[in-house]
Image (cartoon, rainbow, N blue to C red; front, side, top):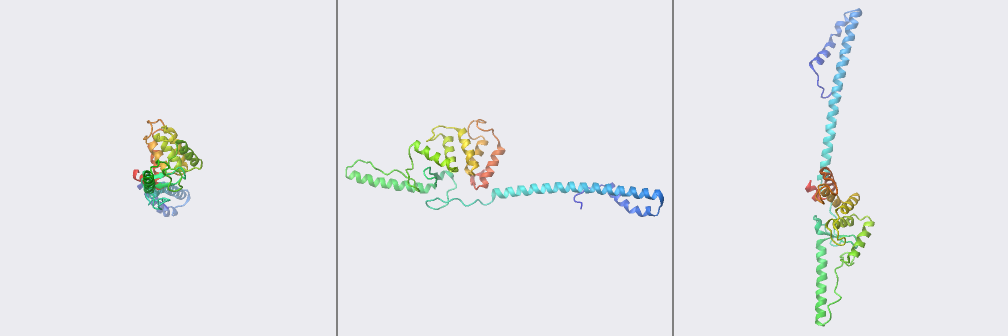
Length: 262
């Protein structure tokens, strides 16, 4: 079967000459045999050329179709409806899209929405206010006030830097991707308990979290390859193709801001 074959006038003419085989039948001897062999050779060569051209055109068409299908599938994967967001373990409502409205608790490894954090702080403040009022009425010293605790496990929320580092290291040994990303962010900003800005260490931790499938780590690595962290080329060489690749991985994992960036 021939598809998309470009047939020249000479090739069509050669095929038409096959009809003249009847003339050769009326001739005998070497002359008639020569005519038949010549015409058969023309037909075989012409059809082979046409068949080769058809296969080449068909192959190019199939390769183009496969490329189109791959691009279409990639488009569908990137922009399909995102998976359902995880729920806050306290209020059981979907987590906010903005990552700054979610707080990671190093004590228990839970991520809690900012609304539950604010409510927990409000209750602690009200309790301390009531205790302070009673102590002042009795002229007692203002000690023994309640410290903010984790809304989930009720451990002390803000411990000493050493306590916080021990908590993060424990969660990281358990391959907690959220803890690894949180520690990487602390190194990136130079905030306690590390108190040292280290972009190289942050890149290593984000790479480890990305191996565990963290969408947040994918976005952070895309920022590194775009040259948004550290001096240009000091940590990794700027590579926009890799940056787009990590953004696509984050988008497939349901990271809405990565889809917006794409």
